[in-house]
Length: 415
Image (cartoon, rainbow, N blue to C red; front, side, top):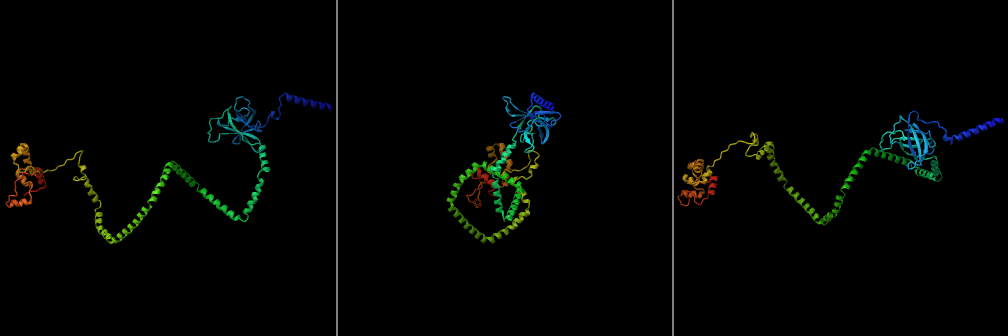
């Protein structure tokens, strides 16, 4: 028996020496079960300020689905590295899992006292996913997970020095205030529920009204200077109105008297007005009967003396028409009392022949109604008939060619 005990002691000592020679560092040196990184994987690195009790072989999850595990946890001691003295966590992820290059790693836990794990997810909005996460990449990380000690510490503060005692007092006082008023309170709550429901049903209209109010206030803000100027000038304008109050009052009084007089005039001329309107009725009736004839007749005024559709008779940019001009009265009045010899001496043989041709000679002038005297009044005719020397049938030397021209145009003289 003694020999067996010695053998067990020696074996135990040898095992201890063997473990010490292999660098045994406690339970963390032993291989741990678990892990979900099976098959082909790729490795990424995340840095945390505090990993709490996260252990190797802990799960790596995407949308609460295990897609890998934590391969190692160490302290980054690289000088000049921005992650120096932070926990360096290497994550193995299945190759079938595709994540953006700007994915985020977060330290999570299943329950308050449950295991820790690392969650990978795309970047939060509004950041857009970019690229693809590859082997050797570094992902951004965040860790705001409270520890169990912090949770129980806060709970201890609430239970010992918090306001939980006041909650009982509040509950008791509320019960006393509502005692006997349950029906009224229930009715008030029902009406409040109806009111809130009505507001909810009118949510779009309310939002639209607020948007319109926002645009209205924006427009007012843009016209700030104009509104300020108007308000500044409104005071002097009101002062002018106040100073002219007596004249405005007098104006209104005169207007009242004018209304009274106008009413009296209208009442007095009522029958005459009605009679005039009745007399006007036949005229309006005939105008209405004229219909469209009157407007068509008025259209001729624009083209008089040519017809309204005279432009249609023109084949191009010209119009042919014929007119007759009788110059005999005019020429007879101008050259009255002159013989052909005198005309030839004054105008020339050709021009005198042309005048004789146009007037038809002395007989043509007599037929046209011209007289020997350009200015002859009825009184002179009577004097000539009576044989008095005050009238004469010969042209007056003092009569001007203009007077003779007018006499010929107007058709005056003896017959």
